[in-house]
Image (cartoon, rainbow, N blue to C red; front, top):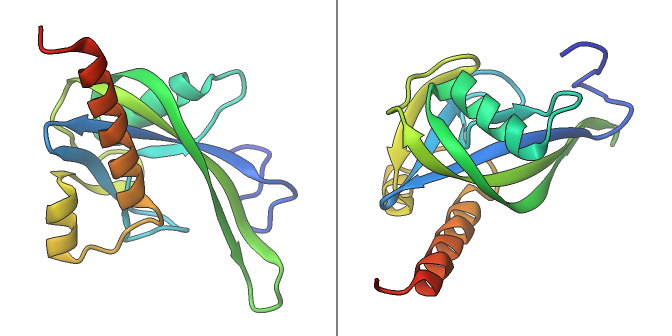
Length: 156
């Protein structure tokens, strides 16, 4: 990342996450670098200058997993703020979750992802995986939006 400091930043940094569901499972990556190293979360990273939220989310998805998806909508934004022992802001991200429709690819760890998996919320809970904050609630929100769309389309 050129020009911006991730640790002790002068202002919040904007990140994007691609929330991709396929059947009962969501595509997740195990982060390879701080601040979430070792935790499972959605593929994502920092938004680049001149890039829309949707463009950034699908770019990060492809870089981290090789999966191709079509962006559908912005789901929500969440804060990720951590302070040091003196109360100074160590990291501050505003993370925008973008729901995307899977097109192709099974997922292979790339960029800063250590591992990739398609997991259901039940599988995540059963395995007791270390998670990025709000991961399960974002899966639930994406699933609810998917169900709303299905109801609007009707049975035919």
